[in-house]
Amino acid sequence: MSSPINVRLRNVKVLPLSVETQVHPSVTSKAKRILDIFGATIGLAITGIITIPVAIAMQLDEPGSIFYSQVRCGFEGKPFRIWKFRSMIANADRQKHLVKNQATGHIFKNENDPRITKVGRFLRRTSLDEFPQFWNVLKGEMSLVGTRPPTSEEVAMYEEHHFERLKVKPGITGEWQVKGRSQVLDFEDIVRMDINYQKRWSLLYDISLIVRTVAVVLARKGAC
Image 1 (tube, one colour):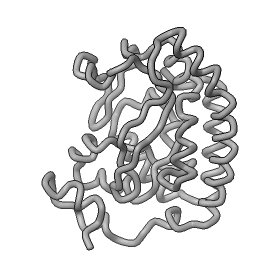
Image 2 (tube, helix red, strand yellow):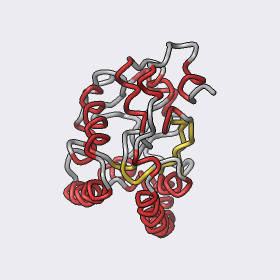
Image 3 (cartoon, one colour):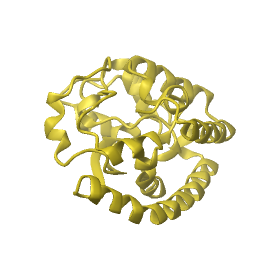
């Protein structure tokens, strides 16, 4: 049977055989899954508490939907729908071509993106916009710690070594979060951090990244 990435990208390029080798231990780790379920349960409880005030603030600032969803690629390129609190104006995706990309490679970032609302900018700086993703973690589509979840458009442009980052589940946080967050503007830097995470992975390393993420978020370092 073809791998999910092969099925999704067969019309784009041939998937390197190296990506179809043994499964990374983090994917099958029961201890990591238990940590994910525990963390997701706490995260969803907090999400339930903050949803009402976030929704009120949104409607006062920029009326529209509370949540934003987008199809992303997870483990082995499997598509899933990621959830966030909306941080941009309505129909922001349709205006993406009007905003200059300040990043290099297969990512899109702009420090002063005009599509971001006032409330949305606060949500991003505090990472509160990420909280609905705990639902994705509970469902097993994501992990608390992993790699940055790419869009299908990004994956369609991948070169051979980029596919290595799809060998683990995407995470709410990861090395890119504690080493720069939105200030990491080169896709190759993200790839290097994602692969380094795979090499260094252990349950204790996951816990250390979670603790460091909390410290970075509280200090509001690297957010835009």
